[in-house]
Length: 345
Length: 89
Image (cartoon, rainbow over all chains, first blue to last red; front, side):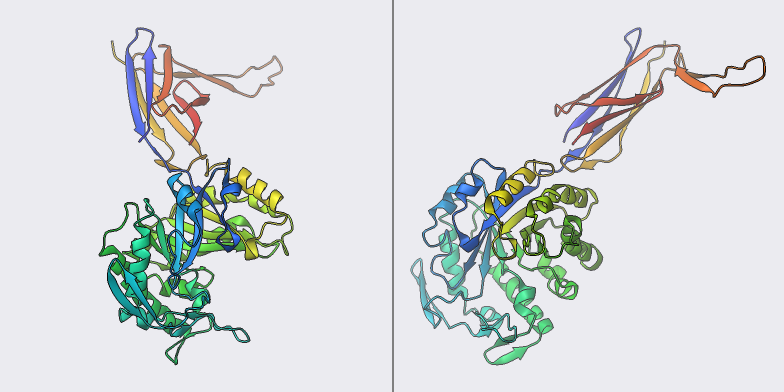
């Protein structure tokens, strides 16, 4: 902890001193995601981008580092902090049926995923392993396979469970033909996520392993339901995403919204956790000058952290979907410049 | 002979990187408490100037601020009894 010393000396050399200690919070880690889980090495080169989000389905046989992703190991060893989003969602790989998973000599039967999520009318509903399947231990083989691969990375990562549970549950879910409301799905997810965290924590994990729950953070009621203290006591971070999709949206307001709900609605354990922004972005359709908006983010994050409450410690720009940088070079230059300013540097 | 007195206070105990920091130093000397002299000039017609004040101590005191983190502090103000210094977290 730094210390200031003040000395007052008179003409005879007699001196009085006083000390006062203070703390300076570590810089916020500026982060990134490149569409399609693509290799971001070129975009990160020479920048202060020190955090990265990646998405993996537990159904995939190659969770860590991922299929043909040796660059992830390189970046991790260089000190880029990884936020690995592990999803029960099935990304549509051919093997959507039952699997037999063999891990370190042990064989696990894993049934076909029996849940549908993101049940927006008029769309095809993605499949996912059901919360009931998780709680029955039927997905242990997927967890064991992921853990076995994770242990080979050589460094610890944050394991974010799910991408956005509010987006997954907004229109209810169906498990094994049984429909659940949004609120019911949230409750089932909390139990399943508690199971998953406990499963991992009961086994040897690489040093530096942390956990968070994936939530978009756009619905206050759902956010409260998904963060009971019994789950937060098992997690290391709060997490939410922040997007600007309206010209009236300011960075301060967009990053603040979910934080305010945390402070108002959640318990002391949750409020004590730092916040990891797994995704943030500016939608060019409504805000064509993405660079100008990005330039306002450092001051917004600094102000929010100075106000107290949960500290935002990582912010990963989502260069995909709503956040696609257009043109890339201009947006990326703005992001690099932003991450060179306090509280990032 | 007495020694000087000093207290130092930061306006916060925890700062965000890049945040301004303010340090208030209250100091003095028992042998020479600071005095404030206020001067008002009045002409023959009875018109008076605005008062001008200056504070000084009989015992000249030197205030130095150091920071073991290497952070540089600069003086914003000093009236002879209270000094305010500033740095950036």
